[in-house]
Length: 367
Image 1: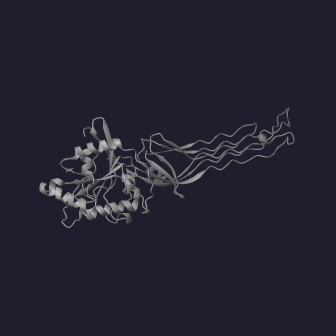
Image 2: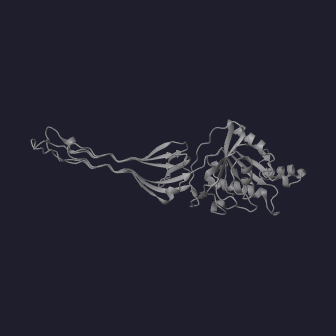
């Protein structure tokens, strides 16, 4: 089953029922006076975050939702029945914006968090409300109010503490497999990862954090090259980024320095605030380099990107070398960091992302 992470829908609250003008005409009371009841209120539309829902696929194929209309009032002072509310369940982490104004309406980032999105219309008044000493036979009544209507943009943003960046085939998926129970596809060709993956990393028995892996970025991603930047939104909630770099690429003409600067450039094009997040370099596949060459290559890389003195780690995700020490350091730093504020950025490439739900979330029992 495909996991849809974006959808545009229309929601409408129910209209209020109409009040009526009616007069009591009983056998022994032929002129009993007004007895028209009020119309019922229309149903409202609510959204609720549900941890048992992990896809927006329902909202891709059913795009219009309408709450029940309130019933009309009746004679004999009978009030109309209130329309039933409509509750729409979405995955935890769903961001809802107004599709026309781009106004942020809600960030459903906790299980059970609920939002009243479209309020039902009030029921109209029956003629019993217009009776007075000078108007004993009122024929006035009012119609029910229209319910609110909205065009909405739903966007699922994965909840993760650490995000993985890098070129295709930099070893991000291999690293996630090494430190968690997530099992993204790993192969010896680029663009193996076609959709985001989450994994729970447990550096200590009583502590854990969530790591997100997204498809690799290449130069021109903001213009749609490769898989584009459609999945970068899933890193918006992270508190820290790990930028994986392959210092021993199989292609001798590859330029790790230029490629890494391109990745940072794509981040800035998508969202400058995302590019400002703490970013650590992780030099992967060091087991492919002679030990004497590792430190000079790392120093040359940091000097080339102008980040000498930055936080970095050297690992071999395939062999597991240095991975546990890295995750322990991450946990210690995350424990001291505040939760990341939510930044809402609409994708600027006009595309809609789709990922698959298999292997989306996995907990590591032993890491």
